[in-house]
Length: 204
Image (cartoon, rainbow, N blue to C red; front, side, top):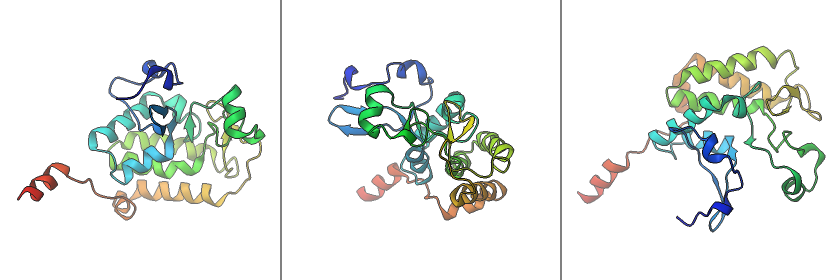
């Protein structure tokens, strides 16, 4: 309700979304959505059980079906798609680090690997987790653990990326440990809240 076509800037959204996929969009005001995909928010919603099982699976379906856009050659995009032209100038103040498909504007961030792995583990989608980890293992050490990657698929080391970044390394190690022992997920994850049973308990 209260969502109008002209408030959705991503014109190809209906084509881009898979039939059984979806994600949590940003609400920037009455009837105004930021329809970009924001990786960290969606992953943390799964990990913290802010999404139902059905919603969690829909987010993972989207990642799997739109792999090239959201994960590409370096897990994973901080947001998709990037803002360009006037939006880039307004939203970023023409920050040269945030040109389209770079840094905060559609850049690929290795540190997001751990949250992707955790969400995949929680939803039982270990195939997604293994695929993402294989990409990271192939590149990160060779590239000297950069902060972020540029480009629509994350092929290029970020133009201003610092090397040997602690959060890149620790995110990778956490992802590896979560894959080695999924029981560790309980340290950072909330159990799914059973709303139906909770409401029945309140009635009693």
